[in-house]
Amino acid sequence: MEFFIDTANIDEIKEINSWGILSGVTTNPSLISKEGRIFEDVVKEITEIVDGPISAEVTATESDLMVKQGRELSKIHKNIIIKIPMTEEGLKAVKLLSKENIKTNVTLVFSVNQALLAASAGATYVSPFIGRLDDIGQDGMLLISELKEIFNLYNVQTKIIAASIRNTVHVRECALNGADIATVPYGVFKQMVKHPLTNTGLENFLKDFEKVETKGDF
Ligand code: E4P
Image 1 (spheres, rainbow, N blue to C red):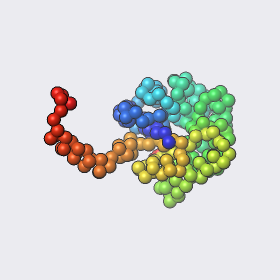
Image 2: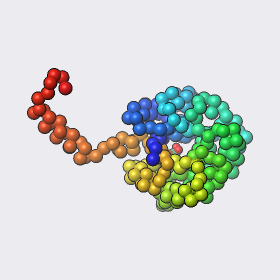
Image 3: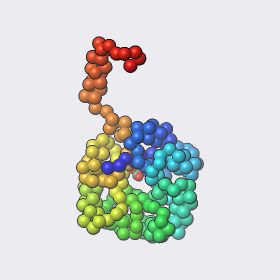
Image 4: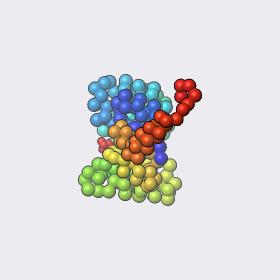
């Protein structure tokens, strides 16, 4: 499973990217709006940090305008993926963009049927939202496992980006259930590194090593 970061914050992207574990970035209009900056400038800056797929979302609701926005965004950098909401108009836009070899990420996916439609329209990625399903008492992780099973069964090439991840348990279960990618918020990445036994183990190693002699400035 690959890791994307789900943020539009440059400092967060730089920090997690410095760990050497990031394959891409996802943004959405809410994340962009938190930054209080020009949309296109943020997206461009992200492409200069992470060498991988960077999802930037259209805000039009009609297919023709979605396609127009998608074309504009894709001019910013070759790694831009056009994020399109899962609507009837969105499906049309995905089809049109895919004919122009512009990659898409269909977002706000909450059911197997929606994901199947997106894949049939030619989506490069689908983003099932786990956390938001859990929030309304449905099983977000079940959607990931069912999608993986069905995509395997029919050899669907569309990649599954597990989105709306809220905690480290989500990440582990996404990996177990075969998500191709997990797009993880900054805070969850920070939690993933930690384990109490790592901390105490390291403290003890360092304390014991104080008694060891070394050559020079080790
Ligand atoms: C995915 O691409 C979305 O940006 C994101 O995962 C939504 O997460 P949220 O439900 O925490 O807003």
